[in-house]
Image: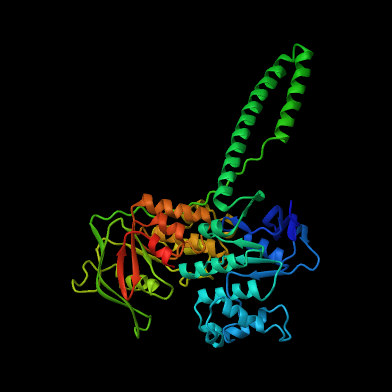
Length: 507
């Protein structure tokens, strides 16, 4: 490598008991900004814990330069910060804790155009997005790391805050990064090298995400083609050896040829091209049809905060046609999720007809499911098998097959849901929702925890299944791909716009 490696792993592996989280991983990080990409359950979180020293490798070597200082911002806000002021949280990040560097906090607030009075606020009173932004700002500017690891930095950020984060990273362009994210556009804009973590190790490309993924797919296809040709040659030689064996009964020279042919087969088997085979991990939506033009009508709907004490915006009139995939756009706190919650709360499946004067009216044929970004209703103590078996008409045997097709290992299906990663929990919810045979999906940040393969599968399923969908997402790539209509919360109203690009630009 041209640049000096400051942190990495040489032929590393980590096992939880007999189960491998990752194996054969060689990863060297230097002054480049690197994206770490992998499927849900590929071992990314475990790999980060090994890099930070929280876990010790089962085998292999951790490479770390002398005096190297690592910064790390995890997915979730650390406990114990809620009751501190913002300034106190920032003080904890300072490289020097004797008070001599406190002036750096004022410089940070000034450089990032953050009002000084915000520093006096209680950290727990900030939105989840602003909590993440402050933790990242502190790690960038105050902790003075040699390399900063960001684990899913765009989770819970709206588009405005994502742009804010990108501007901060651009301003400190010399800071090396390792970014773990499923946000394809964020990776494309903010990293220059891509490492794919898979069951066959880590694969590094000196390219941005889109180019690197294309290179990886092309390499996998070439490996598979070579392996197929090698397999055909081995099959041909096996037939030749079988003939020599039969003829060798009458002539020793054929027996010698048989042995030579079998040795050649052994060499080919030993040198056969490794071809990566991804484990099947289906993410399906129910192909729900509805014999009606309108699935949902809203009229004179006031969207409020949960306790109803404050109005967020007004929906004068909205008709959601069957098959519409509508993206609801707006700044953080505008009330997008509150709209989805209001629609979900109004759905009463046993009603054949809704009050004609009601603010929310469904077509009686609607079968609605709601994906909540926090996944708060997921029973974490229940096993995967019991959770899926709760669906009508699903036996334990059928649930086992469905979980296997969704990529869950047999050894894990009787374990509690709490043992799953956030991405695996999201996949499990989508599996359970499909079994409810819905034709209308409410999706609140559905890609937050899905890996890139899952995001692409969801995009494809939304397009092909014909379901109706109302969704909120800060994922620019997903929004462009999945939506057929765009609504924006603007100046207290929900208005329809032609595309999302103008909204993205204004953020």
